[in-house]
Length: 158
Image (cartoon, rainbow, N blue to C red; front, side, top):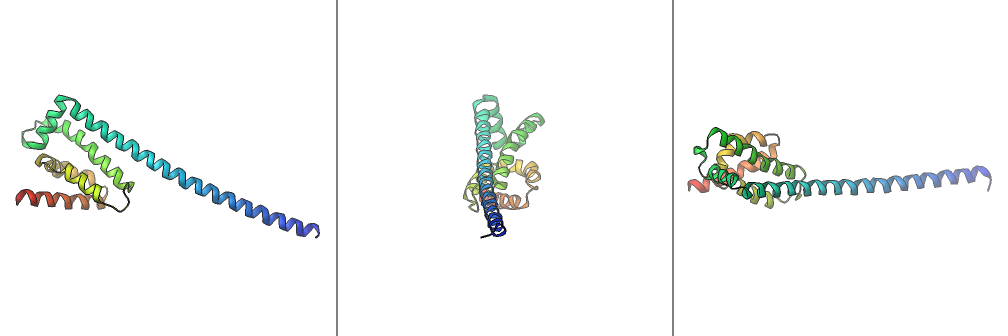
């Protein structure tokens, strides 16, 4: 074997090794990406839990919550504004989970969650007044939530 053949074999071996390293690095990037998505979802879920604790751990906020969800029309402008920004956080958290496709194509969790978010009359009034505007950024989520809303309204009027 002469030097030219040895050089060709060395270049081929170097190319194969470089390709192997590139494949390995690509797989590591995919793993890191999935890990970062999982961490992001975990942080979002913790924020939602903290929000729930803050609402129902504070008596005044808990009373506002009850008033808003059960007797929307009795809210003052200040109470409406407070509730608006509290409740908006639930919408944004759900939208984030929707965008991340947290549960893949399974929509059971979203259906249950949105039935809870729209369960009471005041929650549906919030959706009518503010919620659609929040969700219009993602037409697929808006369509999904609108179906849940229509089902609940039909049940309420039945």
